[in-house]
Structure formats: structure tokens, C-alpha cells
Length: 183
Image (cartoon, rainbow, N blue to C red; front, top):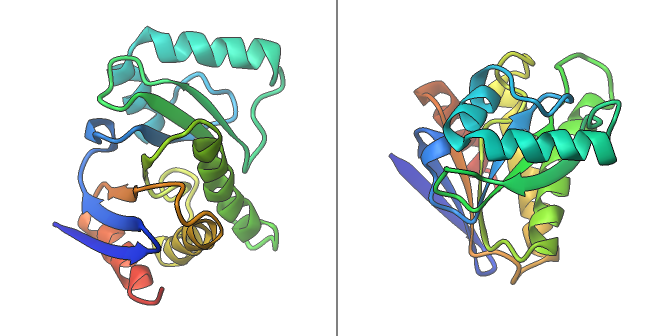
């Protein structure tokens, strides 16, 4: 199951499946601030990608982020054994009613996409950042994620060929499909 919407020359594609199988230039990891793996998507990426990802994350922590990567920021590493070439790690916000939470979720997407531009990444795949253990409701996260992506694509119309959202289950897919219809 997939659905696409085009902005400029870039396809925004929704697909249900496993992010670690995405054959794109980069995948975007919904990481924790420690960058050392964890549960959910983060753990799957580290397990399937192998020790190269963890080694680069440890180096990034030691050299640039000793206290952990701040929420909304993004960094890039190799993808190790994954089909993608790179992993962009971003730390999503834990859901709450605080007014900065939607801004931080949008920043995850904006900063990941900006990093992709800086590295010449033409195709990338996101998961539904912050909607797992961080508790962001899908119906609130989807329009923020797609809105931030659309704003980036309008500002950088030739930077990418595809931005894919690989959604783990039917509920996530339905929420993103509904939000995509409003773009």
C-alpha cells in the first residue's frame, strides 16, 4: 500500500512497512538523545545496521554532544549494513501540551531535511517520529511532519527526488494519508 503527492519535482510517498528495508539514500532514525540505540525504530536500525552505526554515534557524542543530542536536532552517520547509505538521527519530543512540542517535532523534520541537502541526499525515508514510546498522537504528528516537509520542499524545490514516510502499521498509514490529503 502506498500513496504519493508531488511538490515541485519531489514525490512525498507514504508506504506501510519496515523503515530498515528502505532503499533510499538515507533513512531518518527516531533516536533518543543518547544516540546509542534503544527500543522501537531506533533499536531496529542499530541491530540491523551493525556496529558501524554505534561507533559513529559514540564518536559524535564524544566530540560534539557529550550531554546528548538536543530534541529537534539531527546528525548523520553511515547506515552500516542497511540498504540506505546514511542514517540521519533526530530526537523527537516527548508528547505534552507544552507549546514548544509541535515546534520541536517540526524541527526534527526540518533539520533532518537540511542535513540531507548539505550531504547531497536526494531520497530519504522517515518513520512517524515521536509517535511510539514518546506518545505523540498520530493525528497530531502527521500534519506537523508533512507540513514541515512540504515547507522544506517549497523552499528547496530541486533538492530531493523523494521523501518517503515508512509507516509501521495501518493506523499510522491512515493518519498520514489523511494529513497528506490536506496538503
